[in-house]
Length: 249
Image (cartoon, rainbow, N blue to C red):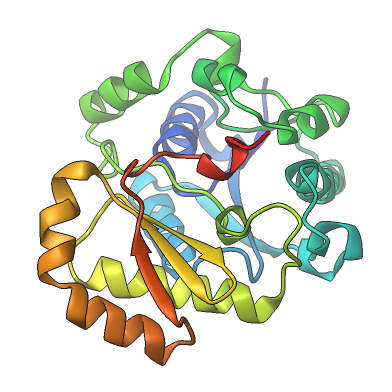
């Protein structure tokens, strides 16, 4: 590929891809992290730290998907709208600075979920090396562990907008509220979690083996969630699962 710009979220997939790209292409690779109100601050800071550990050039670009009325309308095509905006930004940056390819960390497992963003990546010619060679999430974690990447077992993450049901208007206030709610749970030691936003109801998703601990801490959690604007706090008995709001589709 000679030179590449790697879409780098700080997740295990894009971290592994960036590591291999750095080893293969040396200084001809740059990681790019796109930030907006739908991106948790903690994820941005982790991406900066990981890029430093890998020793790769890293840039931050401000994305403006939350300024697009079609995105804020929150239809099932929201991810496509967002990805179309971010792909256009990355391709423009790559062309301006002489990178021959733009890469993302999609893997073989991504083909099995509802992922309209993949359509935008295809339209803009974004390459997905992990998907192209058929690597699954499990295999990528094993390889990341072998390469001593510190986030090899990091739970899958997604933008904050994915916590808001389709059809509910996205606002920067809601995104901030969701980020605060998830930060509360992270501060209490939970690692794998989502807080789904249903107006005044917060629906917590954690693995079933965390249920008893959540119940033990329910007074603290409920109090802090009410302080940030929720009236009711619920625990989803189906437990944690990525993309649960896609189930209705």
